[in-house]
Image (cartoon, rainbow, N blue to C red):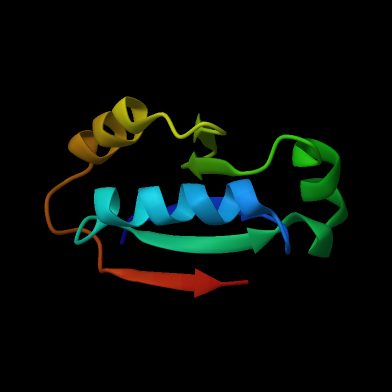
Length: 90
């Protein structure tokens, strides 16, 4: 199953807007694991002022503003039907 990691933090308006834009792009192609950077010191150190950040397989696909082209390209390179629709919260 393909999982996009979505780095965010509570109260981040740009994160909320970007997530709303992202969900229709990935529908039926990937699952999002939402990661609050304030819960893990290494995420906070890496992404503090940079959220929202979208990562797949260890590589950053996009931050703000959402790079729709990069997301679409990443999804196109994923094998068909390897993902379920969903959001995971960590």
